[in-house]
Image (cartoon, chains in turn orange, yellow):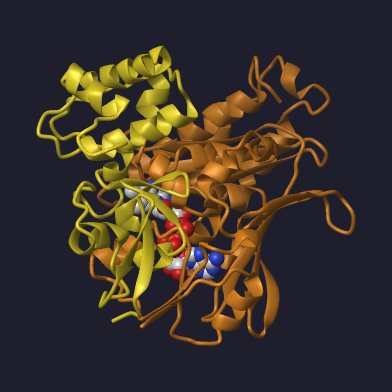
Amino acid sequence: MTILSPTSIDEAVAALADPAIQVLAGGTDFMVEVNAGHRRPDKVLSLRHIPELRTWEQLPARDDPAHVRLGATVTYTDMLQPDLAQLLPALAHAARTVGSPQIRNAGTIGGNLATASPAGDTLPVLAALEAVVEVASPLGVRDIPVATFITGPKRTALSPGELIVAVRLPLLDGHQEFRKIGVRNAMVIAVASLALAVDTRTRTVRCALGSVGPGPIRATEAEEWLAGTIDWDRPAATTEAPDLAYFGRLVAGAAQPIDDHRGTAAYRRHAIGVLAERAAAQAFGAGSAA
Amino acid sequence: MTDPYSLTVNGTDHQVVDAWLGESLLYVLRERLGLPGSKAGCEQGECGSCSVIVDGSLECACLILAAAAVGCDITTVEGLQPGRGDFTTVQEAFIAEGAVQCGFCTPGLVVALTDLLARVPHPSDLEVREAISGNLCRCTGYGRILAAAQAAAKAASDE
Ligand SMILES: Cc1cc2nc3c(=O)[nH]c(=O)nc-3n(C[C@H](O)[C@H](O)[C@H](O)COP(=O)(O)OP(=O)(O)OC[C@H]3O[C@@H](n4cnc5c(N)ncnc54)[C@H](O)[C@@H]3O)c2cc1C
């Protein structure tokens, strides 16, 4: 039984040549499984001591549009630091709702992606922003769009021996937000969640739903309807606000919820429609910020 | 069995021998290093009773793989005391305000509030509530815990 704690990404990737090695980041999902006896690690690759995995950078538009590249072990607390939060407000909103200070200090974006829980709070944001996951293995590197990265509940397109190295998120001009419903404000797994991002340059709206399907769901019909209804020349001053209740109904229609111990499918469908209406009101309604 | 490894806890290096790789920092602190101050409540990060400070950041010891914490600077509730028998400002405030009932959650809360006051010397009530949102008190004595937090902040600024 061994543990490897490399200090560089290259060393970590080389260690993945061993198919039995298990990747450990913040441990907030991994150790819950170990403590409950559901996971028995024999070989562990700890990412804790790789500083370059916990950095982020803002990249100007060149070949790609302007974006932020977040290392895989950037924590929720990191996402809440003002410099990063102002670039990616919906991601910061989502991070603020995760667990507790202890969980936000340890839990990472790479871990949230790899766990791929239907309730993972960053996932609707990453889906709405059409983020790209950078993956590396001893065989090379590849980019996987989030939409194809999550293949089902707790299932991803990661092959054995692949490490999430970074996530790239585009920088958009326009209002962004994340909303989540659960039984309390802290330490709660989402019963329904929603990310909304307005892109004033392309005059589009992106809306993705969490906890109401096997993975994050894009509400494309609702997005197109809303983008076609609002007054893009005066988005903040829209006097006759578009029928946001109709937007809520379209979003609810896109959900694929199930009954479970946290809520019924019917409640989830209702709740996601309410979240959508409120998010759109914040973005485009009277007194909005957009 | 893993190879022996060394953990730096409260400024002292401790050897850990004959351990299983899957052991959490909480288990190692309590069962191998004789530091039972961090409490084993839920062992799934929900209760905060095992809160420790690792490289300056508040985390649950139950969610840290002990062998992965080699090279980290770990502070437990035992390490907050300047000397044996002395209480910290936060601990004094807990006693004075009657913020201890059964006592099980107390070490985790003391660590969490010590972490908060180091970053935010004069927290609002809301900041205190958010800072301890990951620490459960099953006796539900939150009113006095909130009072103790404010008393500790005041005592620290009076010092
Ligand atoms: C009390 C509690 C509350 C929580 N609340 C929330 C919440 O509100 N919202 C939410 O979304 N989640 C929540 N979680 C779940 C968890 O905190 C998140 O999913 C977190 O982002 C996991 O990240 P981690 O770094 O801790 O991952 P780890 O636990 O270290 O790893 C999780 C999985 O991902 C794999 N992995 C990690 N990093 C990589 C990588 N770079 N490349 C490849 N594979 C990798 C690991 O092998 C493992 O299978 C909570 C957990 C707890 C214990």
